[in-house]
Length: 335
Image 1 (cartoon, rainbow, N blue to C red):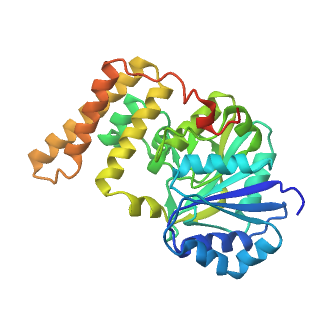
Image 2 (image 1 turned 90 degrees about the vertical axis):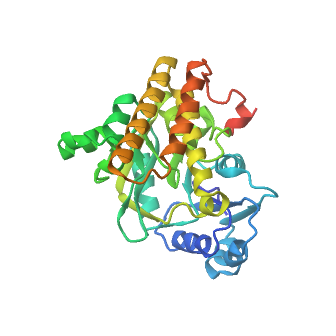
Image 3 (image 1 turned 180 degrees about the vertical axis):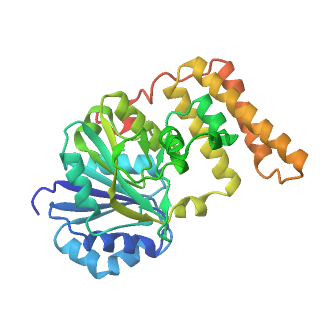
C-alpha cells in the first residue's frame, strides 16, 4: 500500500460490538485520501477484537494493508496508547476516533479539507452527536477562570442574553452551529496535523483519564497553532463506555476533578490557580447551603467540596507545576 496520508487511530478497551461498528463507518466513508486504520487495544478481555477480525469490512481493510491491530499486554490509558500510535505512524494527518463513535460518510474528508485550508490550523474537530441525534457538548472554555465558575455554577449566566452567554461560556451554552476557533475540543474525534505532534509532542501521559485533551489543545494554542471546530462534519459518539466499565461514579468524579486541577497547575500562574480554587470552594459551599435550606438532595456535593478543599490547600502550599511533563518520552516525542 502506498504511504498513507491519513492515520485513523482508535484506542480500544472492552467496547464489544461498538468497535466493529466504528470501523464499518470508516470503511463506508467517502475518503479519497489514502488512509490506514490503527487500532491500539489496551488489553481488552471482551470479544471486541474477535468481532472486528470476523467482520467483512475489517478483512477487506486487512487485505489492502489498511488496518493494523496492536494488542497491549496492559491498559496504558488513553494518552499513552495514542502516543504509541503516533510513534507507529508517519502520515501527515492523524485522526483520533473513539471506538464508541461512528463517522458520517463525508465527515473525515470535510475535516481534511478544513485543516488543509490553512497551514496554521493544527487541529480540527467535528460536531459530535449523541445517539439520539442531539448535539453532544465537545467545545469548552479552557483554561477555566473564577468569573466563568461563578457565572456557570451559580447560574448567573441567566442574566446574560442567550447568544452572548454561548459565545462567552461555550460548553452547553453554545449551540455548536458555526465554524470558529475554539480553546479546546474533546479527543473523541479530533484531526491533528503531524507537524503539531512533531513540534509539541503528543498527550501528556501524566493524565491517565480526563483533561488530557484540554492540556494538549492548550499546548497547541500556546505554540501558535489554531484549533478549529467545524460543524459541517458530524460524528455520533455514545460516550463514556470504557470509563463506565473501569471506574465507579465516585472514582470518575474524583479523577475528573483531580485531572482538571492538574491541568490548571500547568496552564495558570499561581495567583489565578488559587483564585480558581477559591471560586470552586465558594460555589460548592453555596450550593450545599442552598440545598440544605430548600431540603434538596446534597448528592455528590460533599465529595466535591472535599476535593476542592484539598486542591485549595495544595494551591496555597505553592504546589505548582510550571511545565507539562518535562520528560519528552511522556509526551510521545522521540528522544
